[in-house]
Length: 366
Image (cartoon, rainbow, N blue to C red):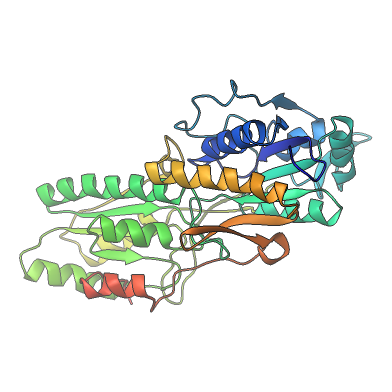
């Protein structure tokens, strides 16, 4: 039993789905039950479930056999900020702070603390609930690996495994047909997926948000490869990459989302631009999209997510409320949620990993 009076906890997952979510849920639930004899419930559809008081009991049976499954058994939503929630009043939709309703729902069910698993938006609400006295522990989740206060987020390794496999497959068809093959990957405003998958997948050009590119430099790289008998090229481009003196390509705007800008389309734009300059070359673009977020987590992510799940319960036991579990080096640590929000981790253009790529001849188009 915990020595701080906690007897029952709730778990929720928010934001986009991500490989490893179920492994966190499983590890947190099993640790809470087996080590501390706690009761555990899971809120359905993230904060929406907290608002509607919709939950499921998480027992050892319920979390059995889910470690290898992608997605989240609790489902998720990235549009339900309870501090700015859309409700209908007199037939008119308005935005309201309904967080007190969520807190009252916790009281009704005797839920003493929350494990909140998510990225920047989800953890922002977690911080706001902590400010209102809710006992919150955060768990970082994003395939983009762009949270500054943890070395690695679970889901990232699974994403780069998928992207690397895609590059391997594009490599063989590019070489067979002497084509320029472009792979567009996720990452939002950080280039980690493109960078690490590009290195592992033998890309010739890697384009990331942190290093605006010059299209002519990419053409130079392709021409150089042709001059040494390499009649194909592989380019991996992050969705947030942009040309010098240009801007990102926006796929669409989702007005009711906390993060309304959806990036996407830079791969096809780049293909068009290159075909204009290299009229004799065939250029093909593959957009990897949600394949990076789906499917079973990698071995690394299963272990990392398990460590996060166990660590979150240990923070509860230590009464370190308002903190987020994180990875520092080889050890699990924690950081206050006040120091998490809005701190993004981007690729250092002249950092060790980027310079490793340059040393083996990879171009960043700069």
